[in-house]
Amino acid sequence: MGVFYNMEAVAFIEDLPIDQELWKNEDHSWTYMEDLYYDASVTCFIAMGCYMFTFTLSIIMFFINKLMS
Image 1 (tube, rainbow, N blue to C red):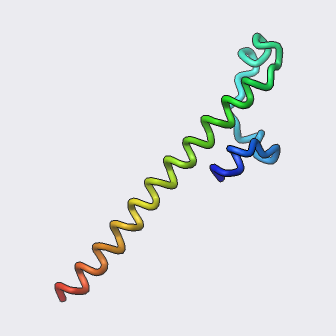
Image 2: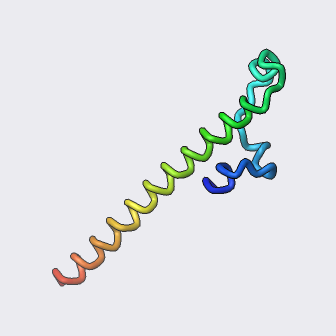
Image 3: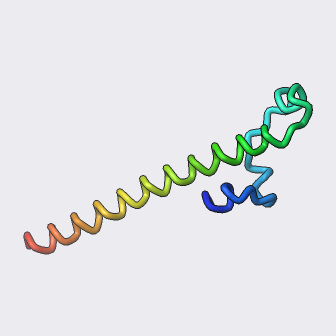
């Protein structure tokens, strides 16, 4: 999903935390939306890193447990 947020996919626009008042104060500029897409993209990539770390740790623990038994 991080890749699609990075590409600013229109399908994910409803998932962005748009502050209507702040967006209105910025004259409905696209840069506000780009910043929201970028923030969501970074968040997805951080979550992916956490998932990869947990997956790698579980594989390592699986093999350690297999060797111990």
